[in-house]
Length: 517
Image (cartoon, rainbow, N blue to C red; front, side, top):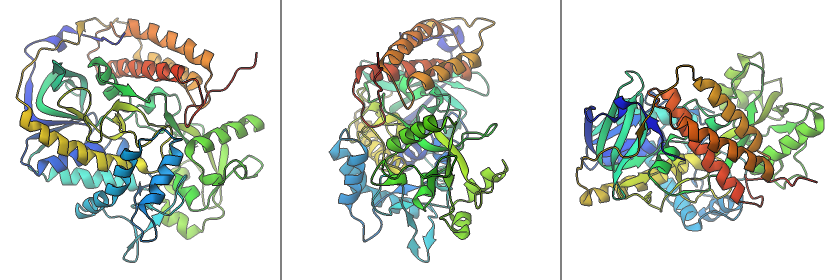
């Protein structure tokens, strides 16, 4: 059951209306790339974001952006590394598009003011898991996402055709006869619902890491875009492939702060409590193996040791490199009494990224006419069963522009239309319903049943529980962000677990463990 209810206020015909040519939902790398690109054609563009501009998932990215920028590197190598990480499930044409168009998107960023780190006049490139060549660009050491978000936000604010609306949460797509006409949204500050009508819509709503108890994602990553897609009967694909980053800071009271894969790229080694390295022999790339392999190896080592974490040993990295390349990690760890120049970093895997999403073609087109998707919200086919490190920001740039180009072409066939909200029924929220407790229960269930190691019985049992919860909670009429996010989480969880129960064999990030009778 995916039909959700809202209070009567949200269904009123007298809501504030806004109109534009192109509506972009989300202000991360994909959304802002799309908006900036479209603004050059004198279109009226509204960008809506659930947080403030620049505070989404993009700003949390540490490692960097992968692209073939070294004359000694080549497209074939990047393509092969991506296909290998994807465990044979990548769309090869999409991967070729990603890799071959990547350098031009990097040049766009540089022209927009992105200050990538350099060694002298040459771009500084490092290496991460799954890559066989140094091709990761970075900025301010481990601050790539933060700098990228800042650069794109500044560029977008200077584009005259772009209007940014902050603290706006999308609730539903407005559509009729399989064509989209905008969204119903909630102003999370005023509590007022509003309609935003558009000729074309680009969904860049990010991911869904918050469905899991342990995650590196910010609080807003609640799968809103996937839930909206389900409500509009869009096609979702590969929702079982959730990637778990191997190394997040694991300390009591500390946030699950991402410890970038670039740390291992510079020479750090995973060790157990006894200081023994354990990735040698697990994979030919050892500590730089693809993320799914490293995450499972850590889980196995923790089980063998009876521990809650392993450690990153940075003793092979010079003090100068640590201070220059990882100032953010150095600072965060220091606030919890860790000096990473001499102390090992306690780490454990956490939910990080969803490879699946709204199915699109190479131009971001979805199964709804006039609605495009890009970034983590979209399933473009480039990641397959397991994303190659630092390909996500590149995907956002490449396919954000492609979606924007296609949206501009679609404008020629679009018309301004006003449609009724047909997706919702009226509901009422119980006085004593505890939204946060419900969210925590869902996250715990997902972590246990649909996490790094899965079993078929646990998946099937959790699917029944989630569907039962969804059947009740979607009848409630929430008029606030947390309640609507709960509904998004539930719908997304059902899609993820349903997909996981159908895929019976282990592949990439989807690992099914046999139960011995």
